[in-house]
Length: 159
Image 1 (spheres, rainbow, N blue to C red):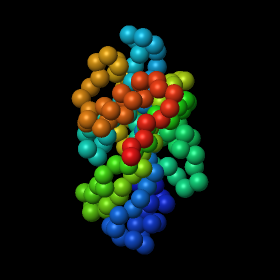
Image 2: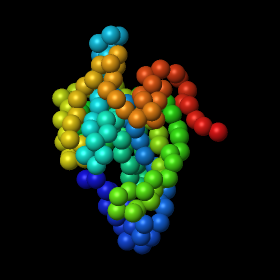
Image 3: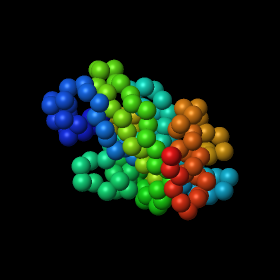
Image 4: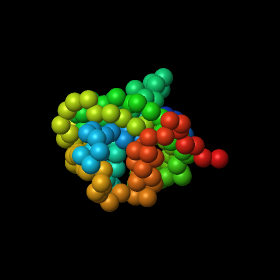
């Protein structure tokens, strides 16, 4: 489901005014060393290649949201192991005029099971890509992946 029901309900009240949302990025890897792979999806709305991303539902724990999004979007079971980056993304305007800004929480996640495919219609592709040869992604998405793969014990945050 591309837009959560709670966002649609809010939009009925506020129209296209800016909406502050919490998002998650799930950087899911499997394997180790030179064989390590990253779960990548191609977004249906923009065609961009990204890790799995999504919106945290009201009352939902962010790590649970990351795991849920991976399962919903790619039919892969993953475990969120570490919060790696907290950042505020620039305000964006969707093609329908809706404006939103996200607090994005990036999680390093470990693959448990499943073969990826575009399970819910939000993506047109879902696949494993070698970490050593990642496909073209936006600079910010590459940075999310880089930070998650770095393995630091503490999360990065901006000031």
